[in-house]
Length: 609
Image (cartoon, rainbow, N blue to C red):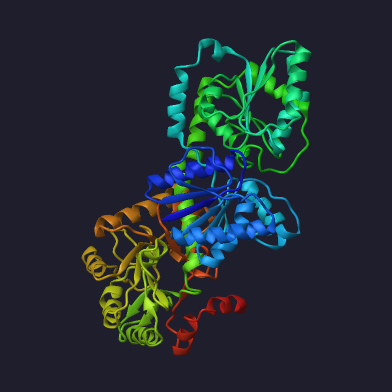
């Protein structure tokens, strides 16, 4: 995939560190990223194109849009990933002109004004680095919650391991014993206000009780009023208390020499990872010492960068910072905090989650307006007894429905076809339709398959994989119906029928414990893949029952798509983990079937209900 990252910045920021880390993971996975920005400080193997994205005059914005359009076309870009409001503004227009996938990551709270609440420049595929940011965008900017994905910062821990190993050899025992309080972050904007607060108010309180030193690392621009504050503090105590060290290429070395690290965003997990106590103090609020008890809550605001603005209490900050200097967490606690940090911010996991958002963005840009997804269960011979539940149709009816689809120019696709379309490997037909069958009954093989073959159609069958019970054992009040054998499934697979998972035992997933849900999802997927020698891409929720927790576990189990019943967004590509289907019943007549395949049918049905 060709990916264009667009940033607007004049010094190194957390957004740049995020983008560069993501780029390195994308390169590992075989993608081809390019970076566009005003400046680029951190090292990356991706191509860099300098462009004045941060210059916001309207003539320059227009020039930027046209330059991005040319670059997108020249490099055959699939996805544009913007990392600020200014970058999103020009990227939104450029991707609309070129019909390119568009994703924006929002790293901090946004200014609320008329244009930000009336014009969504962030698109329909938005990544935020904390849950508090999602709340902010939904409540203050009125953006739709379904468009917003909470995915944390990504940190390349292998790089940190190498930097720590290098720094360990150069740091003396005396350096490790210094009572250095280290602030890591820019000196401009709200983070500069933190440094001013420390120099003016917090450090003078601490220094009355304990001798400490204060260092700042990070930032390439120093506001003119900060150095005099450093000089005043040093003069007042007759020695060097404070020091501004600027941008450092190896922050690990600085952290290892510190007693306590003050920071927010990615700085906190990085400090915890190298075994240092962390005090979370960010752009919006003061969080305090990050402990095993406060880690999860602190992460919801990206450690003080994205929460509600709150007044600060300098006496409380001084008291908690002094306590952290004098009595840091135990070695065992620090080890567990390091484990939590690594698990939550692992770059490969984050990159995979963002690739899922890319898929959604490509769907928004390239998919047809509507793809009907029809839901069947059983197809019975005309002479067979009818089950009690209305989840069947007759052979003759199914034949008429296939003929109707063919006459109107529909062509069947599978989820593998759609996945390859998103990857740019193949186009979709002019009028695609997906035919799905739940449970995996033998009559799908004996009755439905010959009719599909006759018109050259394919389908997706969601099978229950319990090998010991090959019948509809979950429907105890209905006629016993056998499920397909492994041999029959293999025959259909080789003929172009796609198989997806419908769990092992067909439970109502929201009603069972999480470990059982995980086992149903993972085991059924493994069974089908072992039987057919092919990756399982999609899942069907038994009874159409799901909730947000189940959806999350479906994604974690490795499914790219999941189909529901009567729930989910109206548009096919709005949520790949809850794709709404249209069920075909025994009483669905010719006109009813025609109506169920119309682009506006789902909207009509929602209005009717």
